[in-house]
Image (tube, rainbow, N blue to C red; front, top):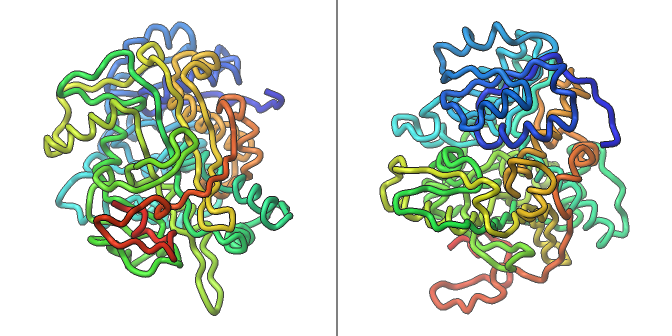
Length: 469
């Protein structure tokens, strides 16, 4: 891989689901795993548990982790020289971060998780079920704990790698538009660059074109990554970083009364809100406005406040999942979001063809739209790493990048993807991302809209009202 990083003594996985299983083959290419202790804790025993034990030396603890038992289970296997990788659902990230800090262990996750019920308990006020609220809790913990052992939050593919894609895309645009691609060195300089370029909107624009060998069954929820993870985020309120160019709040939207003020939420499940977007695969398409950490963290990172004005782009996820997942979501909503009768995560052998186009779409500048990201086919994913689909490999690569970064920066405190050097982060794992590509387009959300059902504002095409259906 062109770099050498000393391994830890022990790795502890909280959760041994799809992403953890996909990550282990990548980890084996970085370290001699026979020299490490590897633990995994999960309430469900994976079908391939013997393979993981024999191939990677994994020690499996068959248990759920909750607010009552997490210390009893984790304290005996944490300590200096340990990395805890939290790839679970319904296990509080903040509780584990604080536990790792007291034990001197490094920490990594792919999103900030609450304890069970934190996403869907109707007795919890809606604004406290948002990723904005979870992130503000993390920032409060960061302030309280101060400097210390590294805990990198929300670093998979998205959130995670897409924040690095944004920086790469801004530099590409700077070279194209300004003739200047000097790399900013801090948050303020990145925000100034984004403002100079005229970026008004950023979509995390993903199109999953992977096709299943077999059609889904009635009552079955099928996905190319964690079904439980997708359901959890789908029933959170839709959220987006709210741009300074926007004129009025969307219907049923609310602003937060505390914190950084970079985002708003809509009082509807994210997977029920659809937005127009664009990717290189199919050009214009519709995506779900599912809430994601990066919608808030990128918007906050690119906020520039001066005495006269505030600049911020509108930022949100626009997710077009696989065909089978779209049908699954449709049926799931029809059943009032009840737990599906059956679930299935597509594995490499289940997929006939297709790719995952995961990137960021920067809009509003003089070139109109620019998409930069990873185009990874199922064929390439299977060639690069066993047990992986295109989607899981993109996420597992993000986990690997974060893992290598925290080993190299063990005393950075609590950080997010935006705090990292994007070139270093991407250099660790670019070989796993297929084709990293930038594509310009003259698309905007009003371009082909005849205005049959509603008036369009073609003079201000980058308003959120022109994107949302």
